[in-house]
Image (tube, rainbow, N blue to C red):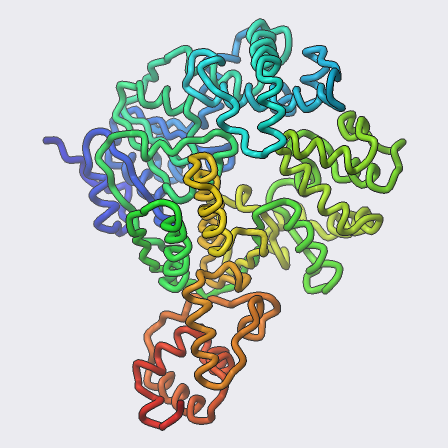
Length: 590
């Protein structure tokens, strides 16, 4: 059997796991933990096959540009890098009668106008109906189904009011969805990116490549996965099962759907074992609702420099609140950078800006530009619309507006004035990003906001969900969001105490009680404001000097938190070392 050789073009020392992948033959899946060098592995895989035609499918444009650079640096001209959409565009849109919607998708009010929808039995019924039609179109275009009616849209609607509306108007939603798709197909209106990807899948193309490397497979659309699986090429799917965070875009985990031999990349070169251990414990929360195999993550990172510092949040709203706190209220930073354009953080997915919602809140109706927000009589009506459509982004913007009120414009103006251009990112005092925007990125120091799920919430929601598949899928994705956020750091992670696994919090509280300390407040650890500091050198071997200092501080009966700070380690690690050296018995200190 042919065994590819590791090409001399790639002299970097590879792990045994990477070598096994590079020397594999046939279709395979690769489950790669965060920071495990999957791009490096795929470049080496391609370098070992210099005479082959290879397609590398990247998740988005930024990943595509980075991948093109890495393949070019190795002189691999035989590798074509595309995103699923750039590939589909070449086959479907280029040279056709189609034009693409410039903004990418239709706003609710645009759908209502195109389809001539009117309010009938319920207030703002046309907008709620248009919102669900828009989502149904997205659901269908990302699926592998041939016809809209093969999908049950109600299965992906969770909120009580939204479910009731969909049940009452299911026929109108289906009819409107088919009508909107027909208008795009006939080129009567511009097509969306999702639409031409769907047309590409329905074309059933055979691509002219010997190998196809499908990156970020855990977030593949079902439509693109269908294209990929039907290729005659040798197929490689790489991703991380636990980094699936695009379920709201109807993504599917292709690593679980492709019955190919499985390989692993379990060693992270981004962070050390302290962070790896924390990430593993977070993923174990899934056992509260579904039996999970053990997650092995070995941390080999040894970063010490702090050049880039970032705040990572689950939502835009939380990120804005944190930016206002650090830049304006506490004045701890002066120069900031938001991943992506800052303006995108002040808009809902449907296009309503934070200023539109603010003007509704303040009663300044003449200044509202968005037709949907302008149609609302007050905030109560807007919040009713949010409930019926599950428009969570708009709901979060409403929360920020209610929090800051008329102060908000001045705060946003200050953030814009302090924001650096793209080439100034590394000069920022703090980088701000949501999890979705910083996926695939890394920073020397990361601080998480407190809007992620907690273990207690997971337990409660698992019990309330009663095993409902949609509820459990969303719960798993919430855990994945925290896992992705935790694993963005190369060195230091600042994490709100309530986000830590309960076992770790309880252990630290027990240690504190034993040495006469007050158990730590739920959200205050280690003299840091609202955060627990997990340092990447906490798992470094204990030296004789470390042990001598530990003994000295312990015998002075200093609080464990103070000892941890002086030693540059976590409280848990200090407690473990005290027990390992049997210092309590040796010095009769209990």
